[in-house]
Amino acid sequence: MKFPSVIILLLILLGCKGNTDKANVSKADCTACKAPSSRAALIKAASHQHTAVVKADTTGMVFIKGGTFRMGSDDFADSKPIHTVSVNSFYMDEHEVTNAQFAQFVKATGYVTVAEQPLNPADFPGVPADKLVPGSAVFTPPSYAVSLNNPMQWWTYQAGANWKHPQGPNSSIAGKDSDPVVQVCYTDAAAYAKWAGKRLPTEAEWEYAARAGKHFDKYYWGKEFKPNGKLVANIFEGSFPWKNTKEDGYTGVAPVKSFPPNAFHLYDMEGNVWEWCSDLYRPDYYAQSAANNPQGPKDSYDPDEPDLEKHVQRGGSFLCSDDYCIRYKAGSRGKGETNSAANNLGFRCVMDVK
Image 1 (cartoon, rainbow, N blue to C red):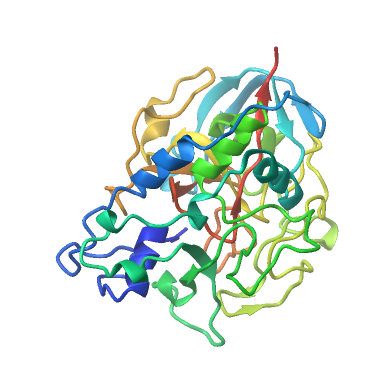
Image 2 (cartoon, rainbow, N blue to C red; image 1 turned 135 degrees about the vertical axis):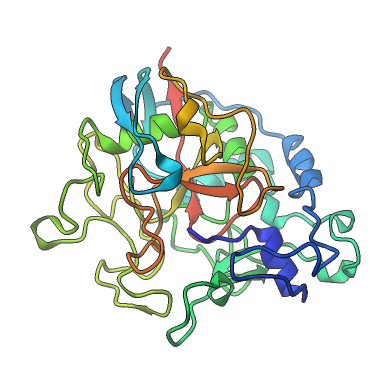
């Protein structure tokens, strides 16, 4: 999926005119684009916020008995080769972390998400400090058909966008306690997991849970796109990005448990919101992955944005479409910069069996 990092979106917003066709900005075109430290100062600040651990509780989690499965897909270059992996037993949240759950974490700890924190002017030389405002990536669909080679036509860096205001300061999560929390970056998700006495899943654990004891090539739920003629996941229907037919009932996030669970009784393991995994991202990792409980590579590399640290995301979102992003399909992988968030990006947690 061509999802630009928040850094790239911010630079576009501030007038840095690089090559956006590939969601990348040329260093030669903009002096501010020399791989700023991915909000390194904010990572450090966030890691020092108070995140005292609450007593671990498996309420709302599903016990996943460990086993062996075939991981990956032949349909995506970075999901090859398909390989055999074994994972230990673990508990997994039955659904994505909700606004209500994240609000409890913030109330208990005073945590401030990365999207809410000031940007460090040192990371953006030459940009006036008054232009560096907290915000995040928001899907902003055009009102007409556009070429699909430039995601900047439907992604914007929105000042004031954060988990409490997913689409900007005029939006709200009031009355949406059961919606999955969004606008959380990897740093935020990891902080919540630590506070809850849990952790983020490895992508091997995530895929094992999504496949739920079965191996279908196209979809985690089976061979057919619409089992019994019904959509079973929250994705984008119609002409991406401008015309969503809302066939599944939603144009944005759906409340958790809006669609049927899989055979492991887990909800929204495809569609709705992307979910952070603990693994760093490399497109070539599967060729050298460990066979037992793989933890991901030791470093990150994405040829599209080689200077940014990225983590794996799984499951796709309400913006996945066969017109454009098909990575809600079985075995596919997503990726995201450590401190970038968006209004289609959330997470769920796991816990070790003791």
